[in-house]
Image (tube, rainbow, N blue to C red; front, side, top):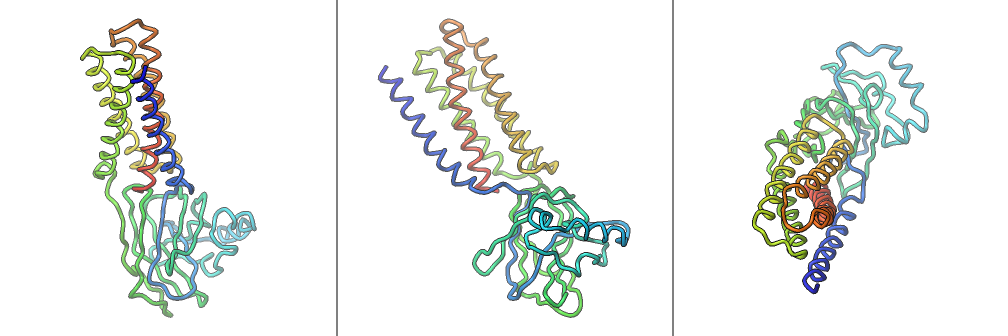
Length: 306
């Protein structure tokens, strides 16, 4: 009994610690794009521009102006008004405003020291440009940016660029673009951490309830390896295909649910120690604690890494 109390004390202490990490790391909403603009010393407005094959029509511009009421600005653009010049502007490569002619679910900004941070939920292709406009309708436009997946922290450094009478194209340098998520080591590190935590938790629970056969521990270890690898690949694919962060969180939750129910079934079936209802109860308890800690650790790490 003392062993069981000690094990539960350790597990709940770990849960509390990671719950604190989770709350701290998830104090704000997730986003498709975190953008930092550095090196600009005067007032400006910013937007994301996307490709449109045909020239902007007057009908499109009229519809955009009709949509831009107070509610539209509050949700879809980070300022109270949209730059008048950009409403009808189409650059030399046929890129136009994503806020007006594309799709954005959320757009916000705040100061970070001398720099400016922008956070967006985008429903656009991963190919876009960033556009700055000052009070004199002078423009600075980035090169074409192509993200391999969403949730990257991108820095646009404009230290050596200034507004001028001519539109400045391909300006500055873009930092922080990541690779295809299947080539990102952080996902695999996260997988190993979750796997080790799951095996340790479930092993402690099985041991506390008197399970001693080697086959029991081999079985749940193998099942954990299979399930965690599958969950990691599913999450990586969600980022790769351009799901929003909310979509990826859904994949993670649904994957954890499948792991929970699958392990309940297979471990109850394959473990041969004790009566079946004891096995079921212990597997449920082990998986519940493993699920909670696994999710907290995973969300914490994803928020800190991305």
